[in-house]
Image 1: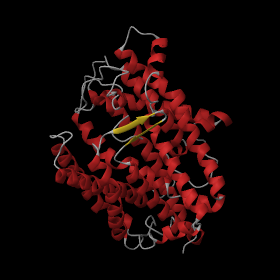
Image 2: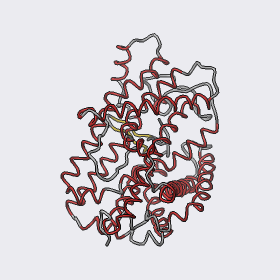
Image 3: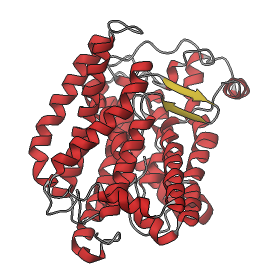
Image 4: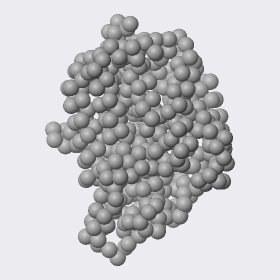
Length: 421
């Protein structure tokens, strides 16, 4: 079995690692643009009528602008089906080398600091700042004390995009516990991906089956767009098990050898990018059309239609995730300075960006500009502002910890939010 660090094929490991680094930079661009568009979706419902009463629509759409563009709906739907799944998948890639290098206890401690502190910083410090414009629009006569009282009276603490961090932390602790109990289990998991380099289709079929088994039960039992909100934690009810499958699939790929398996630069997956580029939009449109049909009967859509819609979602998710992985492995396996800069600060940008995005959307609600231009301005301000703050915080030992300052080593992934900002 290939060495977990890829030392047996250092060149392939380095190229695969660079592809992931660059992909993390691309992801940050996608993430900020995704949230920048949320105020301008053509299908967005009317603004929330109340801040402190269910159904808390502002959680999904903090700011709703009068200017709309239906093209954003298509863009955000495509991102929704795969972007967070991609993040869980990539987050698993370097887990096996990390466990081998650090051991279960130190690995868990490092994850608690790297993921837990940014999560708490965002939820306890940044989210109250980000959400204030929502309250002010609904209750313009109330002051800061009124906002503080209303915020603390909520039955949950808004997570924003950082719900990802606590769920990733939970998966990381689970795999560390597995490693502590049965160290060979990670190597055995890697054996499941041993043929992915030469036969990626076989791996993708197996992954799709596992994802369907994880996604179907909660999706058929609940509305696929429902969220759980309680205390510190939130998650989309239909997706935690699906994300868990993606995460452990990434662990398997990393355990077999990053440069020797599915993501090998000379493997077959990079050659499939054209086919995946066709499959991704086709499966996306299939999912969108079936979902539109099921929404005609909200709450009691016929079971066969819900089943087909769920399968279409899984296929669209796999196609989208693997398209980006194939493109990164095929075209982004060299050092790209500006993507490396975004990648190096990606977790900080992820933790910070929601606050300037929401405030910019709020400040521009009365601007007589088309939705496309408004979204572009929000993106153009929020991205460099988040990057600048993240870079400044990383220079400080304590503040750097609050945004997940990395201690170095192999790249790791963090970060967005499906279906909601």
